[in-house]
Figure (tube, rainbow, N blue to C red):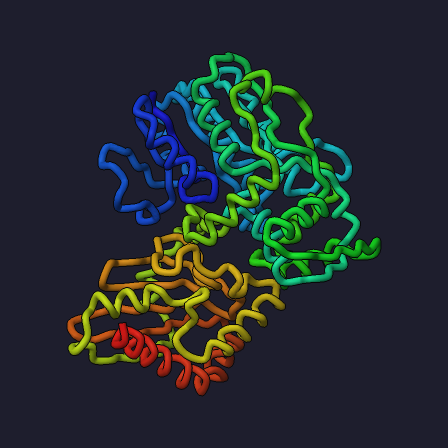
Length: 473
């Protein structure tokens, strides 16, 4: 059975990929924007097609001779995500039909269409309807609500609020009901759908027990061994709640707002198809899923995170853009007396709880300012304290290149009047640290010149801190 997996570098996709690789009956093909985001440890017999769903020619290559295709694509990171999602889904099902694909498996969100349906949820519903529109390709449309797992958006929001705020004034949406589900159970339903022998299109709602959001928050506090007080207030608006989430959790404002708008509607199971078609899957309860997620975080076993999706970042040619950078701050240090491996392991551990080797308070201040402006800030941290992989987030950076014992290139995702990168490179017996900036207009240039004095101290002490730490290890 030849299976195509889209979204394999995303939160669900990365975990599903691991599970599919265990199935010897499957010939797996991956459809990715950039091959470099894939692990070098992948088996050589796995096919990889580079492209995206807006490029029909690359889609044809990806779907050719495929039996079953997973559609795990969402454009939430783009402002025009609703329109992009429609185009993407239509292209996918059109080419799937043309290539005689037998089945498409799609993971969408719980919820129904009504006047209160948020744009985010409406987009997920419309995507499912488009994928289900073909009379030749069967679509299994799995619908999940709040997904709980280490690194999931929902869990990271709840965990961050609970850990940081002993007393919370909350909007009335905390009384809304939902049916959360563990990410492990989502993967079970996705993999079991491969072997479902039904011929017709299906909508399968999945989840565990019904809970109000405030109940989820209080149970999470209990799992973390914390006591928390929630005080609901009727006058907190969507925008105010979104800024609140943006400030105290890792999600940026646009994601927070999309999620908050969806919380005014109940996301509960509308059919019994999960029990009917998947009787062997028993979803674990909310508390068990929370405890498992906490354990994975504590033991550095986080497989994927909500911020793993890289979106349109791979549409950029970073090599060309680095060459075009108007401003460059470069520091060079001799490392002939040090192990190059130690130096690499040191700068590859930068960020997150490990800090930035110098002036951490200034980095935190910059993160706070970024959050206040609606950016991602520093709260995304690191997935792993010692390892990085291409495509994942690192504080307010995205990892765009990692070359073992040689190079780390980070792309800035904070709010900036321009485009920026930070590079660490070992060349001969030297460590070369470079900050690149391509300004947008006059304000971008003023921004750079205003920060030149700070850069002198921050970047100089950063490279010195790397050398010092590598010397001590």
